[in-house]
Image 1: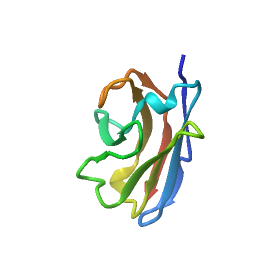
Image 2: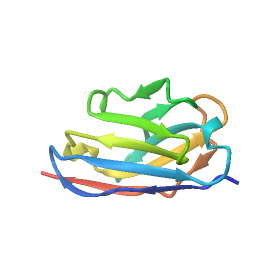
Image 3: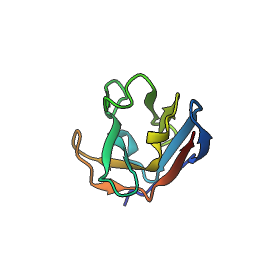
Image 4: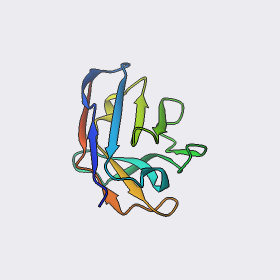
Length: 118
């Protein structure tokens, strides 16, 4: 059973940066399609970014394109989300998801809070 644990959230001022990490247990990480999602209070969960098994293909929501970068290190069983030029509207709980098929998610982490202050 693969488990996902996020870390790296916190409080940052607008314009600042944070790097989130999602560590996966198990030996099958390199076969997992990984994604980041976020959910702000009173809003539905929304897609942020995703990356394929090799890291050769990445996908982004329009709202974060050019500011966020998703990457993975299969040797460390970890996927990252580098967030730059943060805005107050980026405030949310960020969760990572994993799936065996492209852009499908069967497993979820607990999430990490990101708060961007003005």
